[in-house]
Image (cartoon, rainbow, N blue to C red; front, side):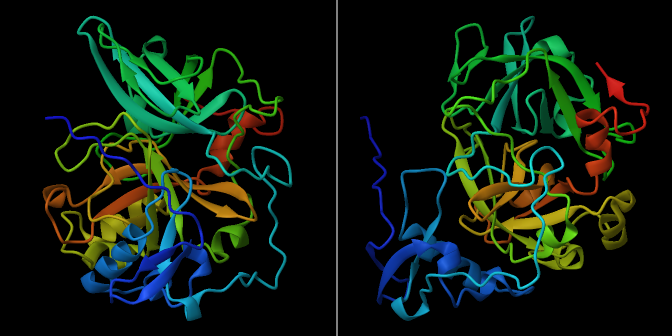
Length: 360
C-alpha cells in the first residue's frame, strides 16, 4: 500500500482553529501578540505544546515561512522597532544586506568515502563567494578532496555508488580550516571554514546570496525572539530526510539550559564557561523532537527582510530523550559573533594578522 502525503498550502489570512477550539487567523508568527513563550525566560510543557498546536494549524508547503494560528484581537500589522539605530554592517558584505525570501546561502555538505561506498552529511552556510561556514566536528580530519558542497540545495538523491546529488552544480573544496583551539569531545571552538576551489557566482539575479554576519552586538540583542535553522535531518524513526526542513527555535540562557527539561550530563559551570566561547542554547518550539542530523547548520533570524547568522550547530543534548519524549530538547550552538575575528582573518586577510590555522 502506498500512502501519499500532500502538504496543503495555507496562506496568510486563512481561517484556522485555535487549540482552544476558537476560530483564529493564520499570520506570520512575529505578527501575533500574546505568545509569552517567545519572550519569557521560563515556560512550561503545556505552553510549548500549545504553541506547537498553533503552528500545526497553519502548516505551509514552503520551507521559508512559519505561521501561527492567532486570535484576531492579538494580531498586529507593524512590529515595534528599537528606537536606537542598529547597524546592519556585515562582517562579510555590504552595510545593507540583500533582502531575500529564501535561504539560498544554505549548503549541503557531502563527505564521501569511495572505498566503503558511504556518505556522511553535514550542513553549512555560504558567507562569501569562496567560503562556507560549518562546525569543526563535521569535517575534523577529513581530506578536502572527499568533500562536496551543494549551495542552495533543496532535495537530496543518493546514487547507486553511495554518493549524493543535491541539485545544482557541486562545489569542490580546496582547504578545510579548523579553528586551532578546537578539541574533539570538548566544549567550545566547534567551528570550521571550507574554502571552495572555485568562487560561487553571485552577480546574477538567481544567484545564491551569502548570509550576513552582523558586526554590532546591539543587532543581536534587538528583538530577535524567533530563530530558525534547517537541514536534511532524521525523523522520529531515525530515517534521513531527502527534503530540506526548516525548524523554529527559541534562545534560552545557559543557566536555564542546564536545568530545563531534566538535568544535563555536563556540569552547569562547565557548560556556562565552555572555554569562554559564549555558546548559545536553544530549544525547538515547532516540534517535540530534537534537531537531529543538522550538524553545522546555521542558527539564524530575519530582520528588515534580510537573513542574519547567529550561530553554528554544535552539540545536541538530551540524547537519551530524542524519541518519544515530552522533555524540552536542547541544542548547543557555537556563537558566530564570538569567532568573528577568526573568520575575518580569512575574509579580509590583508586587513588582519595571519595566525596558525589548521588546513587539510
